[in-house]
Length: 231
Image (tube, rainbow, N blue to C red; front, side):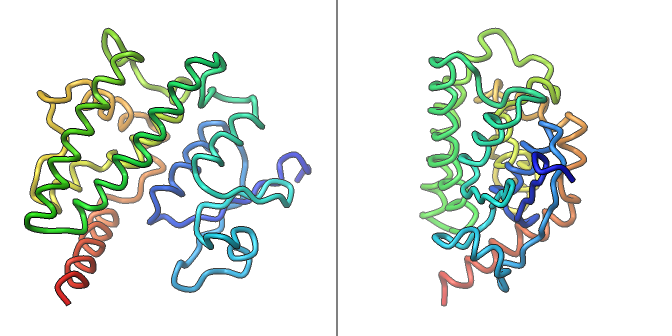
């Protein structure tokens, strides 16, 4: 293997943050060695390469580690000029994309996790917050898609598609586990169309865990969280 292609990726199939990096690598067509981490028994390499957080994902390029999914995706985009651009070159559009990437990462991810791990009034509050944040995102994405969502392919997927896919790609399974509606086609038609188009991309389908596996994970996460809160 040539030095320029010495890429190793530490992740776990359970992590949406690791899935972001996996999709970015595959969209770019970058060959990599994948290391599936057991987060209950972390490898010495993971602790060595990410001594601060000791978490996945970690990308190791030519022996140099990069941690945190958003940082890794930008590094991938700036280092490998092959494949689609994951962020725009234009400084203004790039800044706008970074803003919405941060919004999805810090606002939607955290609130969705609260919905998954709570019940009763706390969950109801979080559900309302998710709905409000999805409405904000709907309006924000209209700047990028003023008419309608175009056909999504591996050549025009970018960081925003990666983030929303890894968060809400399996929204139907999330709705099944939670017994609520997360994506309302009438309230957020652009996001609904966007997710539908992303989920139809062959690479996205191939990279997604089996539905039964995802469903079991979602139920497990919710059950453990609810048991912990009632203990």
